[in-house]
Image 1: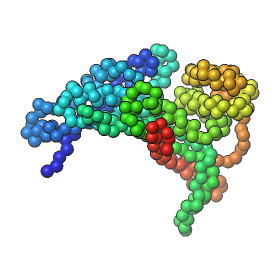
Image 2: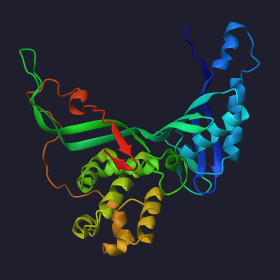
Image 3: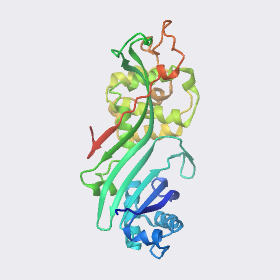
Image 4: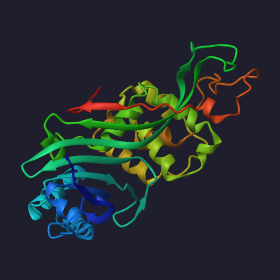
Length: 337
């Protein structure tokens, strides 16, 4: 008879202050593998069994001892310490999920219901067997550039074809490293999951400015919120990094009507841009960049992109107008495929 023994502890949340991150927080799932745990099931012999409550306390202790700043590094650190402390564990499978926070100041943070980084690690006493990193729960709205047409039609089909319509995207991104030690170290070869998220948004292929314009043309986007500030800041950053002065100055130089105050997140973003010389190189000052991010932009066109007309009897169903399209992405050694 073949058998495989596995048990563990899931959803262990940890929080610790960190000098650079402000707060390092996450949730840990631990799965322990070992044939030597079989007597606990067949004979009631628990001498080799590490209690799951012990695992929980071990996670807390290792979170305090961990000297690094990344969730990938913490997963590897925790796995190695568990195997060294409890040699009866033959191998481990760990899942570490980031608990994201917005940092408003050195003392004030707030939790985010947003996308988050993940680490999936399989480790043995002498090696890391598998490492997969990711960014989950990305939610994007693509207002134009998506089509649904040339599909099968018959007597039961009433849906009209659309060559341009909005697309609501739920996206999980995962990537692997050729050298797994690159992913578990805090060195320059590690890819931060936040950088992958920004790369996905930049995949709008130079249309970030138009996307910004359409969002800010909607009254619902005038209401301040943490999610709104994060999305607008990311898009505005992409426009500046394009390094096309005409596109930046086209909207940044016009005086907006009573611009709202700049958010803390936006101020930090543009301070970083100025510190690296982006605004000087483009001939824009900080206030111009602020106007680019916060003002209601002038419409480029009035093209209808909501995917409906008077003949569409399903036009009030949101799933027809904003379809969900999963888009798995794999990255190998820092390059999106």
